[in-house]
Image (cartoon, rainbow, N blue to C red):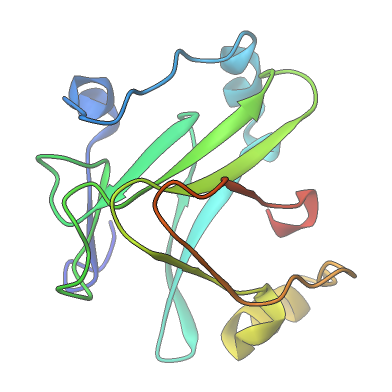
Length: 156
């Protein structure tokens, strides 16, 4: 389970019971086949004090991030600036073919930075014998209403 001082996560059984003010899209065709292949699942990884403290396999194509489980799938407890529904991490594409996760600011600013900007992430990639994506995007802030930003294949 995640470190309760950092975040809370809605249970898988309760995932679809979320009543969202943001319109949750339907599950992509073929998603069940993607979830059945555990190696193809993306992972959300949490780092604290230079080390990985938790990871979540993304078994659902939509993850709303916010400040409370009443309004989100994952509640970030690390800052008072997090809104009840702050951002969404969403799979766009088919469940069995091409696609990737995107992040979108839905009620608050989102700070994005490449994996190479975080020494603990670089260390995790090296320990796993993986190389960082060759193209490193610059740090950026996503504002509400801005186009969603995609993540490359090499990140999971």
